[in-house]
Length: 364
Figure (cartoon, rainbow, N blue to C red):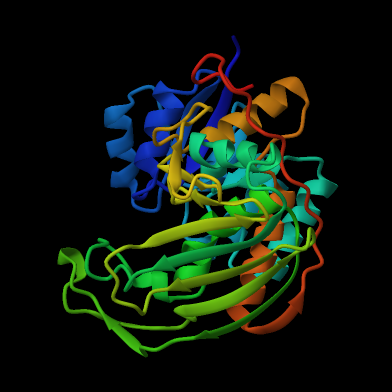
């Protein structure tokens, strides 16, 4: 089997699980090369996976004809420049979320990929996991009747007390909507379909943040983005959702996602993960029933999206985490973060569902 070769730009915190899964789990891809501005990070990756090549800069990866897909794991505000350079060099691109820090940048990337006939897509791929896929099947099969609403809540007080380098969460491209919103909005559109309009209020309740995690203890970060976003999402289907993402609230729990239907309510797992407990409430039952998972990839399967993209290259089919989805999600998040009422213009159709069963690590 000839594997699709991947070059990774950025070897930060999230790269560990990508390297592990793309090397050990997914059988149709190969991590060929890595680079990082801090070369020691690339060297550490090579120590764990000796077959990987190290390049001094991303252009060397782009120039290597053996690299099929560039995996962009840089920080959010860097996504646009790195993805654009890779596309201009003729590489297919899979990016960590979000597609770009600005909507106009995302639109430019999608247009460029189309012009050059290249694949562009990105995270999150958690919607392809056992949890969201099982929920989608329950909805599609009519277990809650016609969906009429949703509620999504991501509540915490930010990352400065635990993340080793949290400043970027409060800078351009950061904030709770751009950081965690991709998981929730991606799950929602895969369960309920295209968003037609939004209405929201967005603000920041703290002008600065003091870091208390060890690496940057005592440093002060200026908050440059909204950190408390409260919105209403109108779906083309007629369903109406509420969403709250915040870094401003002290709260014991963090995530909640619920879908309401004419014949029941579905409690969806935290969309930041690939699985979790699914609960279904039917009026005749009187209480929630735990529903079994009926799809694979229940463990941390980050890399599933790029493995699906690689399958597209070898089979010439649509892939699930494509740029139609990532652009639609970006437009929704951008509108919610800006506040006010916004008509959503991007097209979107729900991605094809995953196929249950099969060989783990081989995409169907």
